[in-house]
Image 1 (spheres, rainbow over the protein chains, first blue to last red):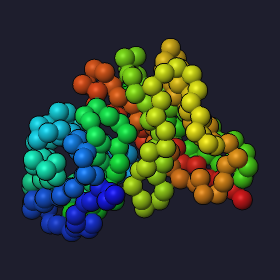
Image 2 (image 1 turned 90 degrees about the horizontal axis):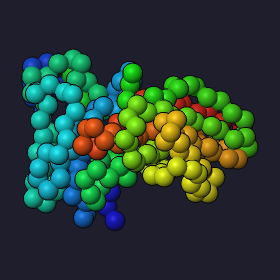
Image 3 (image 1 turned 90 degrees about the vertical axis):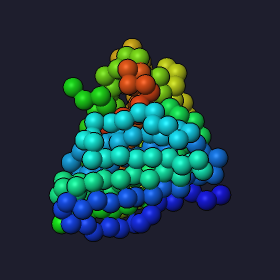
Image 4 (image 1 turned 180 degrees about the vertical axis):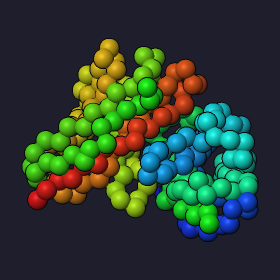
Length: 113
Length: 112
């Protein structure tokens, strides 16, 4: 059974650019959550999608957005990148919304220069 | 006060000893509690979930939940060097629509 797949694994972007990250959940999982992980802040919740609807949103600026498609795949977009956006972005899937029994992907390491 | 708090450590225990990891949370209405393990350079992986007061055992791992005192702990018996990792506590907060919050993690080193 395939796990959670995140692409790309690594990204280097320049300040002011925008970036799109992709996440394919485990087959049958309809909930996809996104987290930002940095050494100082730990895992910070970005948002959760279930059945193409955003169910929860963390305390991040509007530059961070996401969406989910009918096949449960999800994308996350960050516009007008700032140096502080450099982080590991993790996607996690679960069968149901509100189910913390996540399976995480390997993450996308974003570096903003 | 943070929603979920953990002692960042590092915690060092000798091989074969019991490692005790603790987590406190702020929301009395929290219903779901999870422990994740994260090896350096890897993504978190789920170890255990617990929903009711008391102990839950799974192999060498025991999760303990005390809702009255708002803490959850993880005991690792017969610690092995392969248990060296960061352990993350995660809690659903009822006042956020069951949004999950993670603690910042406790770094554990098991010394051979």
